[in-house]
Length: 423
Image (cartoon, rainbow, N blue to C red; front, side, top):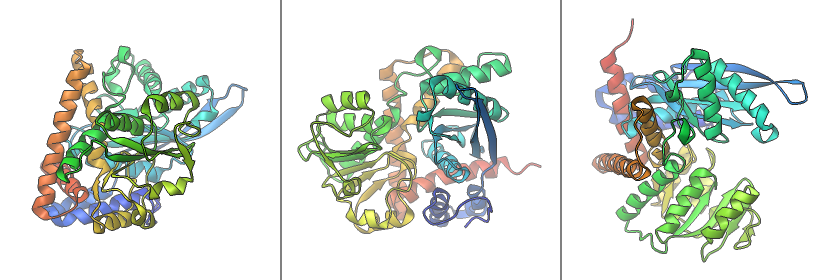
């Protein structure tokens, strides 16, 4: 375990989960294992005070973070989340998972992540803009198109990215569209970016279903987290003939064994802000979600959702991790023992960062692709990356998660070794 004194290393913490995942992959790193400690430490962690004037004239202070885990393979890349439970330890783990994710799909990036501990729903639009601009100015000393490129995450969106891009550009005296991804289309954003993470979940899920002879036609899918990722994945599975039998988000849990009508559910979610109260389903207790009879389970909410107890209750054949770190190591072991295949977050939800890479490349060249071109490129990269990982899993007879870490860590540590230590 790490000896870092400023993080929570209790078994359920995201950082402890990440460290356990690294420990499991060390035996497969060969001579590169001598560099393994590199993976257990963050290169740089910035904590900033974010003071803003509220609409009533009072001043409020918020704590913000930007963590760069590893930059051996390129500039940092990772989202920014606004959430009342954001901590340094959580952001460290998310940055580390971004290092693994970017290397797993072979993008020329290191891993980074950011966040502000705030309940954004309590702020007005102007307060949210002031918060974003001040935060961007505070972390401006370590971000940049060739240094560290933020993107949307929990409770952030294209508008937040537009404010970040504009603030950074004003501070450096030149328009720098490549400083963030996930921007509005007319400010250098990429077509296909909004649904890219959910599309990646679908593409990897489709490939995994083929491997285990699971026909998507009529397959039952349960989705935890019905935001951008979960709903996009649900729509794509539904379009392939699957039935969405349960959905859960911050408003509640709904289920219909015959399948939810996505054509009416999606407008309901947009109008009401969540799945609760949907007329075409029955409401159920949140904890009962883990007992739903399904073939595919998609945890697409927050981290640390599947512990050992919940893992014993899951009825699915296939778990697709749309969220970052949704399964604790003990839960992973239980799912493995039960023969339930898990496609891990660090490959399953890598569609978002892959299209972010496309956006970054398009911004540098000022040449933009069509959405069909974006989706074809995304599918090709995701399928190729998953096949490489599956080959590694078959070769060593290890789980897809450990195989993903093996492929990614080898790439990261090879770069670390070849670059050497300076001075």
